[in-house]
Image 1 (tube, rainbow, N blue to C red):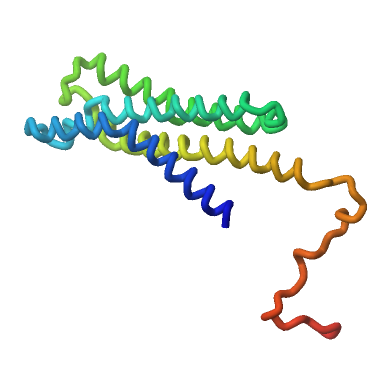
Image 2: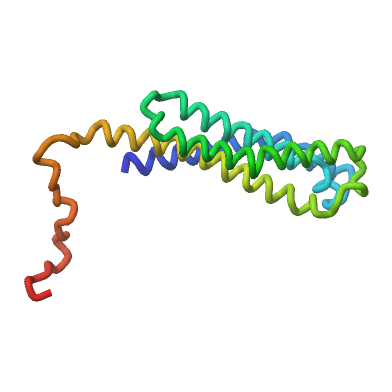
Amino acid sequence: MKDEEKSINLMQATYADVLFVMFPFLAMIMQRLWNGENTGDILRAPDLAIAATVLAGLAVGKFVLGLVSDADLSRFKERIVFFIALDIFFCLGPGIIIILKIVSSGGNPQTVPELVTYVQPVLLIIAITLYSAAVNVTNLFNDTLETLSTTPADTAENVFDFSGLQADKGQRERGPDR
């Protein structure tokens, strides 16, 4: 039960971070709606790409923090570096490119391609997913290390421990003919 509580608290903290990052962008979108802009023009503004880039940067920071926070995590460094590369390739790079292209077009929504209205929300979803993964992967590796350090691997009595395979009391045990 304690692991479940820890997982729920971690998930709530992760999404609190996401909501904290998204709040200013929500305020900007509400202001644009108040000013009478249509949703197409709002989605052609660089706001969602900026939010995705911020979250992608936070994800890279979480991955790096997990990598350097514990020396024992060095055995997982290739995996963590792989997640960092995924984050940069699928979110941080495209987000920066979209921001630069929108800003260089003069901020006029009519000059921005309609494809951007579909790409930016997808980019934001990818950024939120990668940020959540960054927090979960780092803690998963830490939990794996804690489990490995608390289980004595070199004691002879634990080499063939089959206690987890015993049948429950409510289950019917199989006989030799089955």
